[in-house]
Image 1: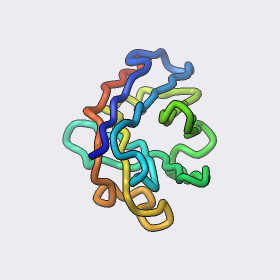
Image 2: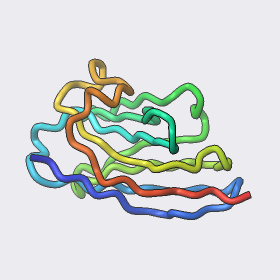
Image 3: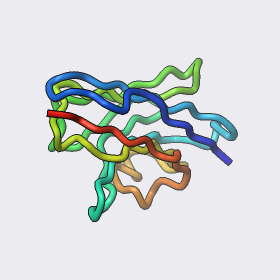
Length: 125
């Protein structure tokens, strides 16, 4: 089993930046790809960014240029930074882990079997 716990800013003003952290514990050796996803009420969960054990990353086209995913393997922590945040970035953000490679899992939520509890982020005007 893999446990994921998100933390970070929950409220930020438009134009600012936010950084979320995801602490990974448990059977971390099984994890091959980590991802950040977000969901708003009434909409499906969508992938934002992923990072593999090799450090390769992939981002949602809609957010390229504003987001960055990184990892600190010594701390078993994955980070998501969003710059120039917009009100439409308001969502519940969750980190997730896949036992498949990122080239397989990509940004598809169904390919991730371990999930954090999610953290609500609100962007104010």
